[in-house]
Length: 207
Image 1 (spheres, rainbow, N blue to C red):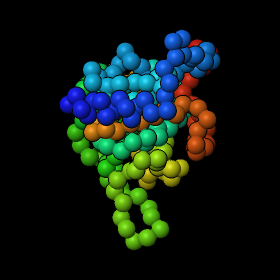
Image 2: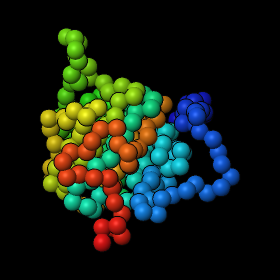
Image 3: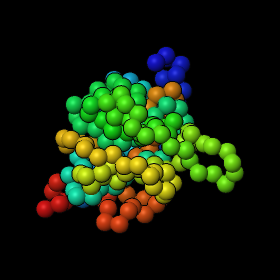
Image 4: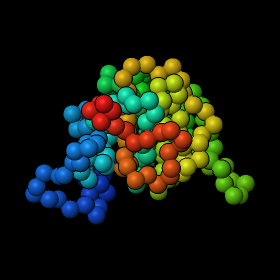
C-alpha cells in the first residue's frame, strides 16, 4: 500500500473524529470492539475501536459464543472489502475474506466466499431493470450466526443463501483495501435483528 493511499485512508478514517487525551470509555456490560491485537500490519482502527481502514483484516474482540449473535457493518467509504466471521488462525494480511480455510465472508462484489472458493454470487434488487452487483457506500450489512448457519443481510433484506459447516471459534471479521472504510455496529442497530438474535455478548454476560 503506497504512502499516498495510506494518507488518504487515514484522512477518511479520521473525518469527523476528534482525538481525546483520555482513554476512551468502554461500557463494562459489553466491551466488544475491533481488536487491535488481531489485525494486519497495514490496518488502522479508530473511532474508539469501531472503524477500520487501511489494508488487511481485523477481528472483533469477542467470539460469537452465544446461541444467536448479530452485528452490523456500515460501508462508510467504498473500495475493496469483506464482512463475515473468522477464527484467530486466519491470515490477517489478506485484503479479502474467504481466501483461507479460516474465514467466511460476503464481499463488496456480492460474492460469498470461503477457502478461495466462490460459494454464491447474488444481485441486489432495484426498482429499475438495472442489475447491481456492487454494494455501495452507506449500505448496511447485517451478519447473523447461530453456530449452524451464517446469514447475511443487505439493508435489512436477507440474502437467499447461508453458509453452513463453520468450524472453530469465530469472531467478527472485517477486511479492507483500496480506500474502503467500514464501521462495525454492535448495538442500536439500524435494522432489527432476526427473531431470537441479539448483539454479541461476552462470556461473563452469558452466565
